[in-house]
Length: 257
Image 1: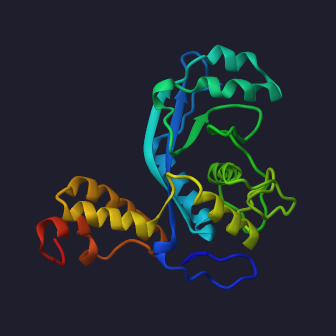
Image 2: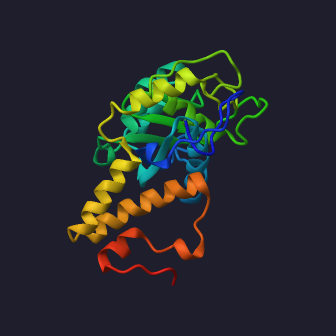
């Protein structure tokens, strides 16, 4: 469990930040000409806000998602999706995905305007509608989309639905909590994905790249770690803003700009 996270009835978590698991997430903002039921109105700013809240939810499991990329793209086969109504629409959702951005070795979240359910996990991808609505519960998330996204990611890690309305895996509520068994299950399952890495391994890779003359690659990883540190500990002070990659590449230690 994690620094800054707490399970109901349990003590605050005090795990070292190096124990966090980092997972890449690609978000797709779908559009379709003359198909308002598909075209999302979410923006990059919305995704940044949503992802921040998703990471606050998943901090209780020591899991942090970083935005691998944001794809704003035209859906393919929109007529196939629109022809399938109700429960049958799930069979057409995957057909909306452009081939060139499917990718592997990361999690995918596709955003669209309308579908029958708030969100759905389909093994290859998660779909979330930006018009989602939920029933509020005590201690729950303050807006639907981060909670729906977090819930579907829970399914990606093998979690099943639960009846406890304050639990993240309850259907249709704003609940966000996980129990200790679910936390263990998520962490064990996350380690089975080759693209999920401990923060300590990411830091070692970044240090190695900095030492071997690959500052650009190292900088990308240090920025990823800095985003994790900010999520866990808050923004850095002025004297800590220079990245380790820059320091390692230059061989100097400076304390500000």
